[in-house]
Image (cartoon, rainbow, N blue to C red; front, top):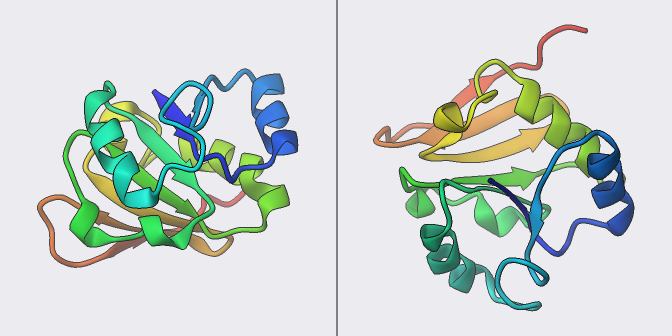
Length: 130
């Protein structure tokens, strides 16, 4: 299950719908609008293996690692969010739900940095060449 933070612009949500990428939104289908970051974590624990995308860097916290979800900080401009969500979901290191679980990820134009349970050091992967 893909979950988008309410900070992703409507235009980016629409692009994802056009690309047939299904998701749920914080503030509409998941939690209440304005829910604080730390209060979203218990909500994610109740969902079936969610992958959560946000433009908020506060979600790139290795202390929030948990095997039952994936947290992703989209460190890109808000107008690029949908493009990088799609690129991330297609990346061979993260292209299945199983590969994503237990990670806290930073997605940015130069690549992907992530923490994976139970590791204590960050990892990096590059974007595939086009």
